[in-house]
Image (tube, rainbow over all chains, first blue to last red; front, side):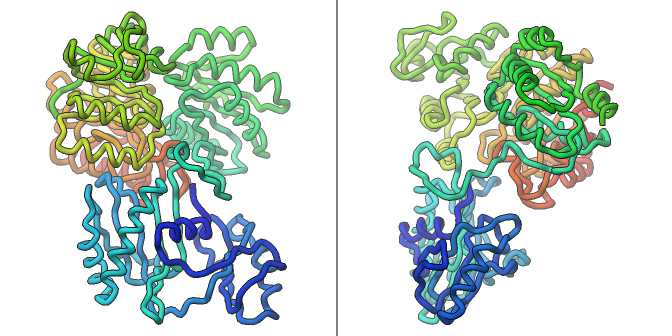
Length: 351
Length: 285
């Protein structure tokens, strides 16, 4: 899950990483110390360019600025709150992050000399794999050399060590500090922070964050598409979308019902799918492994009974408990097609 | 990689759980020699007549263990894999989905310099039709033969295998390396196994958007694979920056797109296809 800036900074602060003093405000009546930087709390990048950050110097501008930011939509997100931070006196802005590196199957430190919003256009990042037992003294030294800030060596060593501990303790998969601000007093402060936490580790934390988990299994590709897809397994779901597209149809969504899907989760999926305005057909492509085909069959029967305006279903089922599934569908006059291709051919006739 | 997949003494960790017991039955039905299982605190019970022990160490007091297949729930999976590594089990196959990434980073540290090889997690396992079913790949859809399949996606693995079977084309290996960001053996180790096994005539590699493993595999294909190799990369129409299903499938940059990976594989000498159907047709010719 992606945290909002104020949530991420609270975690940084608990881990001993300096952040600006701040107040979270949700309405115009909340008290703010001036001057301040008001920052829209939305779970998406590019906020500054979209007008989601305002510097407020005087009381007279404050109410209007809060009102405006709270109603400003940024790439589909309207903020529930604003972070009012002290205005830092900035000498230099850097980029620093810790992330999971797939290739080395470990954590890597990534840095750039130019922090701030421009970093997205920069490509020459420096990176250091932390290895199995990170040597923070050496890493801090390398980072200070790279930033050309020899006076910050000790601070950087501390910072990386704290950041690493923060990442492990909180099951974070990404902590990105951008900008990492060098203030006019030569202190290091996290100006902004993006943090992603591993949803799989939720069982061992008491996470109470605003942001809803990123829904990976149901993704709208084209809300005006004419064919919805239901499949199991990420690969098969992607391949089904590819096949719909290759057949000259317009796929509306990607849906992986996952391993061990049951009637209830499937019904919920059907209910979301029928919301697409141009929907003419639903392709169901299931190769049962841990998911059992008879569960899918029961969900299909339930969907046909409970959902009015269900467009025609084109179903391909195979794998675990297929015979039972075929019997259930047969008894309810639902046709199973022999292959995905036959489903697509039939769907073309309908669309 | 030494061929560890043919070995005969197979155990199941988490054998008394719902998935563990269901899949143990299917493995036995496929003729796989499941000799024992573990669930802490359930020693003395049995599942499908297979004896249950508290730990791998206890099993090893009675018999050798060549391969362990893990069905333990995600929160306990790290402990189960570490137990198998400590017991020096040569091949560990982890089916469990949803293991925290930091747990897998720890597992990865323990694997280095150990005597174990890990397949998975979040993998359907490996199927050698007529020899071993190590995981959840449905054996009834397979046919013994000489094609070898490696894939990151469980269901696409089944799909390719069943498609070949329906055309009378048999398989020697069907291996799912798993969809997680951090996992055990990858494409390269499997391709090496297939290249070195004289019984393998053709190779299928199925990939996805996200990560660079298929690109690294392409380097290996170019330098070392002389057998005919057929590929399909899923996710040609995936939106950028959105995770599709499992954690490994997120399109981070254009380099990680299905289009780019397909292009690089073609450059490495692989036959590339744009759907599973065309993949099966190309291999069956």
